[in-house]
Amino acid sequence: MPRERGGAAVGPRGRRAVALVAAGAGALALSGCGEAVTRGFLPEPATEVGPEVIGFWNATWIAALAVGALVCFLVLWAVFAYRRRAQDEVPVQFRYHVPFEILYTVVPILMVAAMFGQTVNVQNALLDTEQEPDVTVNVVGKKWSWDFNYVDEQVYVSGQQARDLNEGAEGLPETLPRLVLPVDSRVEFVLTSRDVIHSFWVVNFLQKLDMVPGRVNIFQVTTTEEGTFAGKCAELCGAYHSEMLFEVDVVSQEEYDAFIADLEESGNTGQLGTELDQYELMPDQRAKLPEGMRN
Image 1 (tube, rainbow, N blue to C red):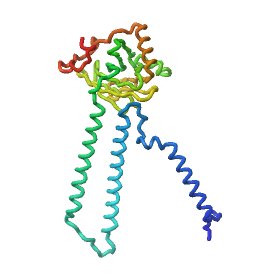
Image 2: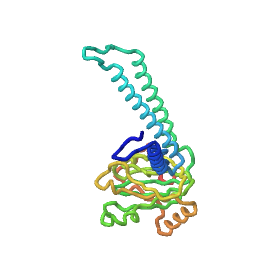
Image 3: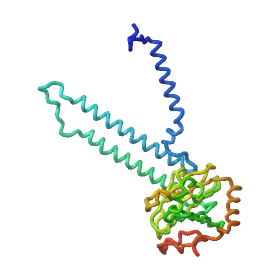
Image 4: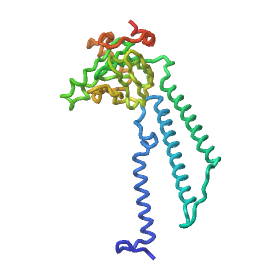
């Protein structure tokens, strides 16, 4: 007999229809965010090493969810298996359980060791600078903007201080420093700071690195996608930290060459020096600089 709900009969066909509608809605929702789910809701990668970062990110979440599900199951199992079944009954008491103690000691050690090992592997891939780069850019962080020295081309881009741009917030993107890179090229970033600790972060590169006064930090990426990507400082560095933004344009080699030529025609030749730096580079750090920056 069909069941009555709200005065209307719901038979087997109605229930099947409801199930099909629900399944269709679920499939539609998943199809819309399926790609985002497969990359763990991280931004779409624009570098060669990005998929490796996403794979590690997803693996850690899967492991964490598996551990959480196991812990919840064991808690519920203990609650129901060893509950008091009668008012005058006392559940069996255990002072220790050797197999369980071995389990929850050995398994976490193995998991931490595996995660540590994979973290080292991914970190080594992110910080690998053994290959010869196609483009070398000295990225200089300053309160609160960026300078970009194209070392091999001997041209530069100088950013304005963020506090001078407050009144023009509506057109802010047009005033931001613009870092242009060629696609399918290995780019080396030589990171320095003029004042305090900043952090160079291009969101779609899925990688960031601190810029420490007096030190030189270096990493490389291989660009794989053309487009415009957001860049920002990822280290709280003062009053206008939130406005320390820049844009990255990954373009074809022809467009990149035209951009460099435009900088030369504009008179942005040479390199922005260290005259405004508050701290000198430590002696052992100067050797990390590319040849064109050691003068």
